[in-house]
Image 1 (cartoon, rainbow, N blue to C red):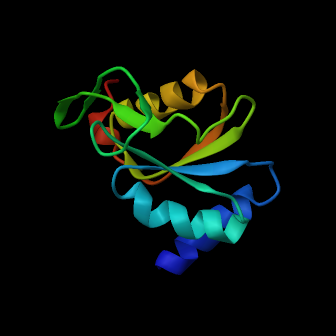
Image 2 (image 1 turned 60 degrees about the vertical axis):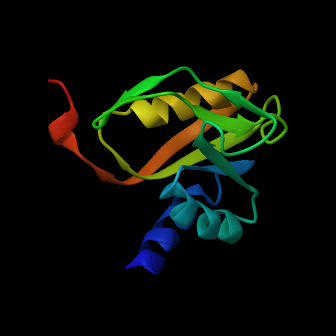
Image 3 (image 1 turned 180 degrees about the horizontal axis):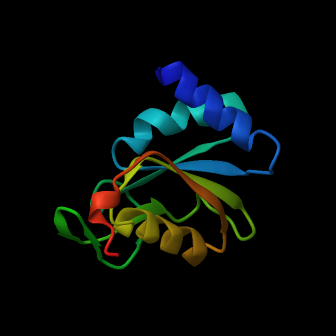
Amino acid sequence: IFQKIVDIFVSRYDDIGIDSVAGLDARGFILGPPIALALKKPFIMMRKEGKMPNTIKSSSYDTEYGKRSGLTVQKDRINKGDRVLIIDDLVATGGTLSSAIQLVHACGGTVVECACVVELKMFIDP
């Protein structure tokens, strides 16, 4: 099943002009690298605060588990004009993805799309 998921994402993003693939801490680190390798694009880690040097930080955000202090990305990983695909395993409230989008924009990049395997609609406020 894992290979099928990777193949589906690679097929979707192969021809739309991506410069890099960003994976969210931590399950995005499982999905992102094989997709980035297949697309022949660099993989970027977006991590919790305090895990990497030379980073910029997003503002805090809410998740289904409570408030988080923000994601970080290394300052030199996304350049102005870069087209970034954000990968994570699931989306529930959208807080973590929103934080990642904020980081890409802060670096001058553009988010091509946010790709997740699972959507938990029970956390969406109707």
